[in-house]
Length: 137
Image 1 (tube, rainbow, N blue to C red):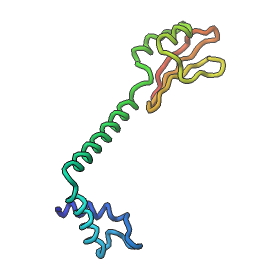
Image 2 (tube, helix red, strand yellow):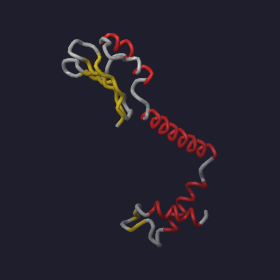
Image 3 (tube, rainbow, N blue to C red):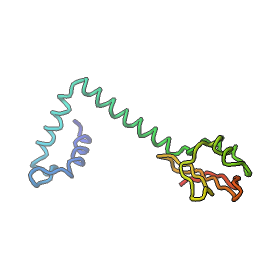
Image 4 (cartoon, one colour):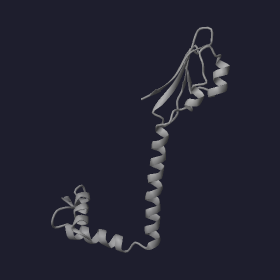
């Protein structure tokens, strides 16, 4: 293992303790280095592949969730179809059921888990659309 690798292990070991003393103390360094080296050295090819696959899978899930977070809760192409004066039934046909409805039904909100924004559709007292817009956090 290179010096750079050993420095990385030292940084990781700073928070660990063995019997009340820091794992990075000079008396524990050889023990820590030997234990880590033995673990990596005895890892079979199959276990190394499983570990690598797991790391890649976790990275992909995080990437996909991050991508989803920046997508609007409803496609903007559908939101642009909602026009002033449309009825609630027409809006429901385009956007689907709202996530939340204000008391009295004057405003519908479309949101989605892990989305940094929401769509609000406001209705006039006669039940027609007065405004529809997408807001990001």
